[in-house]
Image (cartoon, rainbow over all chains, first blue to last red; front, side):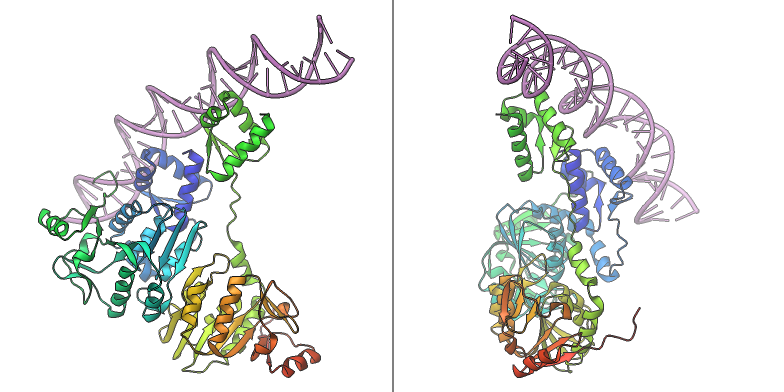
Amino acid sequence: MFADERRKKILERLAHAQSVTVSALAAEFGLSESTIRRDLQELDELGLLKRTHGGAVPIEVASFEPTLQEKHTQRAKEKSAIAKAAVEWIQPGDTILLDSGTTTLQLARLLPDMELTVVTNSLMIAEELASYERIHRLILGGELRTTTGAMVGPFTELVLSRLHVDKFFLGANGVHLTFGVTTPNAIEAATKRAMMRAAREVILVADHSKLQQRSLVKICDIDEIHTFITDAPLATDEVEVLNRNGVKVVVAEETQQKE
Amino acid sequence: MFADERRKKILERLAHAQSVTVSALAAEFGLSESTIRRDLQELDELGLLKRTHGGAVPIEVASFEPTLQEKHTQRAKEKSAIAKAAVEWIQPGDTILLDSGTTTLQLARLLPDMELTVVTNSLMIAEELASYERIHRLILGGELRTTTGAMVGPFTELVLSRLHVDKFFLGANGVHLTFGVTTPNAIEAATKRAMMRAAREVILVADHSKLQQRSLVKICDIDEIHTFITDAPLATDEVEVLNRNGVKVVVAEETQQKE
DNA sequence: ACGCATGTGCTCAATTGTGCTCGTTTCCGA
DNA sequence: TCGGAAACGAGCACAATTGAGCACATGCGT
């Protein structure tokens, strides 16, 4: 990987995400932070990005919606770490299904532009993927929900009934060992269930704040999850319960340097 | 193997990979690195690649998509006038179907926030409608096309086969009295036909630059259109032909503010 | 045979990319 | 407002890569 190549990738990344961090880039490329800093400095001088402390942001002015933006930043580091670990699960040629949600949106941003089929019911993810060249994108239709930007309902489920994907990345509001996986909205829950039926492997992505939480509507029992990717180490007994239920647990490393 | 031949191969290699290395090329061709360096230098001076330390990367065309943004501004005033006239056709409680395209996008922007069900296969329109409170929004899914942001294909048509809307606002690239209504892409044309089948009334919206133009793929004959909204007065014989085919013609008044 | 252009390989000092250290600056939570 | 942690930039060291120069081989026309 050459410097120019790497810088191009940094710009690509920045085109999809609102920001990049020095530490994350260093970890991703397997290089020192010094090198990344030099890259960012160079790109900054060329006017291709704007340097910030700890990273960089795109050059555009961006009068983005604050509410959505806010949510992004909530536990952004955790979500990003989880998304990064989740991307590792994806191989060229895969057919993946992305649930709506901020963690999966982050995942979409981190997707490499490789031979891939991505199915999603999230308007934001669809938008995010619009510029990818090589990714084949199938959008599940449905009724558009304002709060989550998700497309849900019978039409979504109709299309899902005709689909079969390799991997489904499921987001949720509550992950409880005995009460199962939950979300606040009944229609969304039904759609999530339909997505599970369409997938060979169900991968649950949720940061540690969701753990042992209960939301209103149950999506599924914990043993219906094949893999659970989260950001903080679980208690040993929790891992034991999960493993006993056939759930593989992956704890995402926050970027190398621990604080 | 001649030098020119070798250089051509290097360029081919670079067209497929993101980069090439001097050492790899030297090994592959069984030549010294000096020779490869001279090749790369030559190609760099010719502007056919960009030299880096240890190898080379392709020239960046940086072909960002101005096309979509450009299209917005093209004939914006006409499109806006048409959209304004089209909105008059919509009543509270209606179920309307919006085609993808810049004119219909403009229409979506001008929609009053009233009791309404809007169905669309356009990602941009979906996004535009995301903030509306009272409008019930149904998004047709399908494969996402990069150039137009439209969702098309069998899944789109599957959902459409289950729907019935009051009014369909159809966009097109060519409107010809004898050859009918046309568009450049076959898959999009098929989806547009499916949308027509799902509608009680088909309303064609197209500015006068599309008139008597032909694009590649035919969507329908002119007599399958119920209403045609455009921005410039047509010739009297044209109107006569249209009326004879059962097409109601509406000419939108350009708004007062001329510059 | 001769002169010359071209293509190639080798050597070596100079350049570049990178990692590391260290003192300074900036940020964030108490 | 303050203190510690994180991030920063300058400077240095080291290794890989580079370019210039030279030598050698081949091909071509005279």
